[in-house]
Image (cartoon, rainbow, N blue to C red; front, top):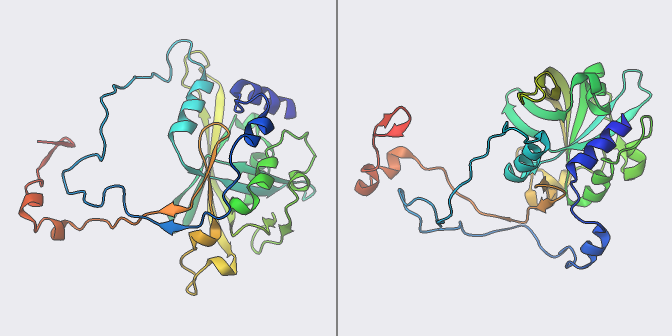
Length: 294
């Protein structure tokens, strides 16, 4: 299984740098002084009907994901650079016999419902070649999702190493396991926010590429959050809001690129009854015809 992962990495070629450390050394250091703060919106004087803040004369290229000769890896690279930023799930699992633990990051991840709390995680490859996290999750129906932050991003990234079967990613990361309450896998002690979760359903995907019509290409799982852990300094008294200034979340961009969140703006959702009191805005209330303006 490790050789399969190595071969896949060679095909994807995430790292564009022959010598990453030399490239990194030429860049400015990580700004430890940059703190969470609010700014104005990009266009504070925007008015209903104004459209985009900026416009471009550039045209668009149409890309057929199944064009003859287009490999699936090209769609992978396109999508992970276009669907951004993505939160990163740091998933902890344990084997059915309880003898093997696994810890790995996944950026095919998101929250999809709150009642019940439902999360989705995507895995590359079919069920017949399930990697450790997916195999453990299917076997035990339990996991812990830890949200990756600035405080341990390097440690989390190191768990993506293509280690042989039976070798613990926990040891490479240096992170500390902490006991969970309602599931068997440990949570990450250093995580500001962790979610104990149980598997509810899986769906295996088959390639639609005419060149690989029967290939099993991915598995999507839905897990339900059954217990939450939030660090005391990050949560309000009511247990409702997590402070982004304390959490310092990291998001995934394309390739090997990540982003930090230090800047935000607030944008209230408009109320139809209120905004249409303005006669000019009321003129914009046109009927729909098949989803389009008449």
